[in-house]
Image 1 (spheres, rainbow, N blue to C red):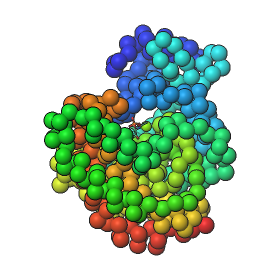
Image 2: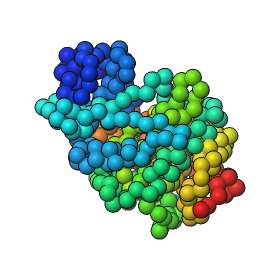
Image 3: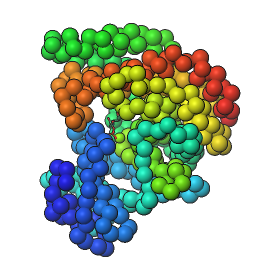
Image 4: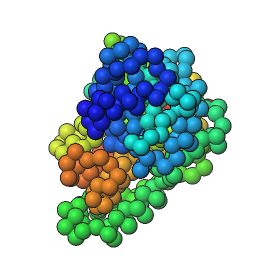
Length: 354
Ligand code: GN1
Ligand code: MG
């Protein structure tokens, strides 16, 4: 049952405005941050989630962002998700066990951790584009930053440097290849950085398994896990999708020969994105290949930092999981870097600017 008993979960869910009681819950173990349960014994089904307050400090602001975005995220090939209010009319419950929310679960939906299918990659591109189109006209300043500077490379670099100065010497020795890679890549990426890109409301965690697909048709339905929905640049969402779609191995794959940059999946994703009405500027399009390198690198350096800090941020299934994730993410970063010219040619032939 995960960390909570059936009684606890029913007790929590009873605070939400739902007609029926006595749900049976099963844990969803995919995330590194929140505790997530799905109740499937009654129709309609629900997702009950404990929001990690250690990671997300401003729960009120976070839920306000989600409510605001969900009002736009529906219709026209994008399946809506509803937040359920508590009996006192709020979108989350705060009690001594933490902060909880309930939302509708989409029946006959599924998520993929990895894929080898171009149809899945295409659909992922299409739905991420649709998500951005639906949010294109919102007032970005109405949204709070749920994690300040979440994808800011300079912040991640200084956190890494701090971890380096505090880490045990055994860890520095074990991680020395990863540390050297970080230092080299930080230098290279700084030279390539672009400024003056438009600020958009982004999802900021568009890994493949945050996209729901229809079980029957494999059509993409919508994006889930909106905790990091806030201001950002489009290449964040592009890069996070590419790192989990174009690489057919899982994020913590230890056998690096299995980590690949699949060109056909890159093209399929980009073609799916291009089926949407145009919304990207030329400068954003030019910056996408860099996003596909920066995002895996950024996740890798965050995992490395957490390894050096003794796993204080991510939930880990075993002691060295953060290091394995880092090494795997860095391996993909290098493989994407090697395809920079290929990515530049593809995006400029497939995507048309505004
Ligand atoms: C974390 O828990 P999950 O999987 O939704 C992380 C994301 C990473 C992801 C996988 C708030 O999200 O940035 O992409 O792990 N979320 C946060 O690496 O740190
Ligand atoms: Mg997440």
